[in-house]
Length: 261
Image 1 (cartoon, rainbow, N blue to C red):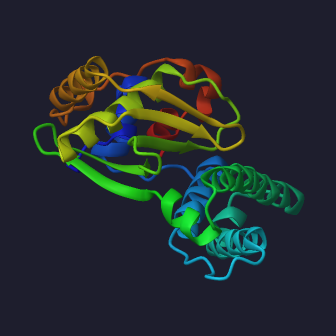
Image 2 (tube, one colour):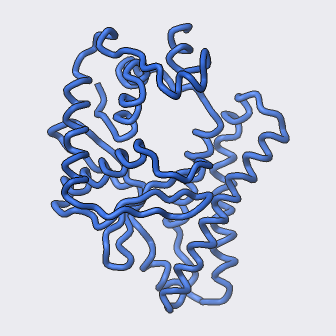
Image 3 (spheres, rainbow, N blue to C red):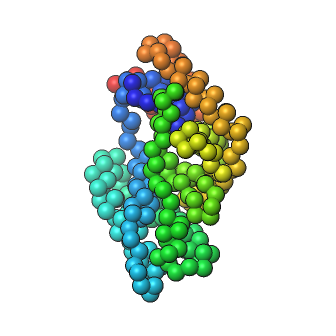
């Protein structure tokens, strides 16, 4: 069995039966445009920070805009066949393309504001604001592994940030658990607590929460509990939870679709 992750723990909390199919039986997830868009936007931002900005000042906004656009187009092209397989119309595909680019543009506008606030030249400011991305963190005791989207140390504090492309901007209980687990994993890896964790809703803004010991303890209890509950490979130990996912999707709920296969 593969290690648990923050997302697999959230899945178990939502529906143990879905966890069983996805993470024990290793069933492939059903393709969905929102998942593809989330992956595209995440990978584009990660790629942006792997670029080297120009030494000359000139028009840094043009360089950043064109660099981000180029990376996004490359990522989109690689996903084109997968997107077309969803049976969407050309106009629907174009709208999703524009929606992704709008989120990236919104993020870039915020980034330019942060650049200006440093009072430094672009290249120097870029290097200061450049975060660690997709950092692997692992706790052997509960066999849990995660990849942190962003570790930002630009202002002296350690901030762990998770990107979200959803249109809802409230930090749900699932979000709170997920970022608490990332804080816990960071603490176990580096031996210090991050100062803040948060969600960057790419359609809106960054929301940060201060980290304290109670958050770390809460995340550890959750990791330990799910570790114990997911040792079994008997489907009977993974009941279907008729929660909001099942009620919202009905027969299209992934559990139903897996059982029909």
